[in-house]
Image (cartoon, rainbow, N blue to C red; front, side, top):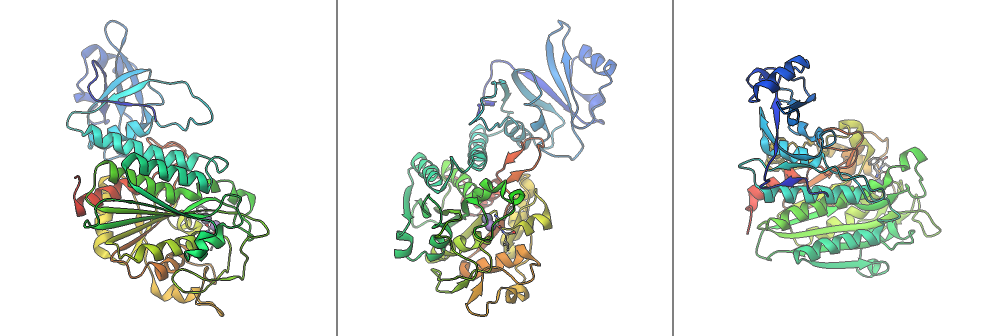
Length: 456
Ligand code: BES
Ligand code: MN
Ligand code: ZN
């Protein structure tokens, strides 16, 4: 990602942030004030005005904010300001999130088309931790880049490469179980879902930190592409399925945040990386698969592949009884129907965890919403011939029944949190450009820092 944040710039131009109410008190020079008045600038939310000085040169920028509005609002500015270094001033409720929003708004996915460098920079506001900001920017950019990269350049093998690169950067250990070895080492579900692809299925494991520290394990759905399998998706539903590894990207992004700040945890990241593809070796509707847990699983729908690969990974995760187990997955369309693209669905039986998470989500402007693990719906997963089906009959409460399926494999974890994400901005909002998005990782980083300690 382009460097948009500078710590100690020689000089910078002010961005006077105002609300309609605070505009009269804004701390701008008199000629600028007269200019704004004559130009009819009233401080309306999202509006900006380039303000000249007495010499006719750009002196600063007025920017309108809604009172109590989106803390990322300044994220609209990098795309519209002239080149230069700026600083945020004025009526900001949260200067840290304003600066973060600004910097995140400068993200571009430039792998395939070089866009001209715009050179809009922001001086880190006084009192804001520049390292923390840089870490967050790097993590979010990593997640976005991975999600935005199409499957021809980011299949299971390249997800492994990305995991190895991250581990190498932080001196973490990596183990990968690939192809037929998945069967030998008892990961039958990961193998079954991924075996039809030209790029072998694999389980990627990153481990870092002292064994004596609290164990935090992150599991990310790494479906490089989801055709639906033999229960093939219609083209409209398949179009965006390069993002079906958004959970894996999120787990890697949060791992970067934790490792870069030296979180006091023994971190494990588990990524089942597969392509849900179609070939003569594809798993079929009606197949009954074995699982690492020992439960037999009838395949009601090959398009419910994410929960299958997660099941084996969650089983492995629980074998060492982690203190906190979090899985990230673009798991169901039903979660999107329920909550829309901006709100990941969070499932946990741990009320204290849910409350802490909601608090951090709010403080970090990294929203999510809890849905219930409603046990009476568990019977919807019943199979007539196996221990469980992978889909529910009836198709109602699809996000909940998917979570209940995972729960069969995640128990007994100390604390288990399941996040059903969209991992995508359908349209551009300030600080959130259209395309891949990191959801929930900033909130979780704050939660883990609070629970287990911020740094080495
Ligand atoms: N990756 C999809 C879920 C998805 C679709 C997430 C669109 C975000 C946007 C998942 O593998 C899937 O296909 N789920 C099915 C489950 C169904 C077969 C029970 C779904 O949601 O339709
Ligand atoms: Mn699917
Ligand atoms: Zn999927």
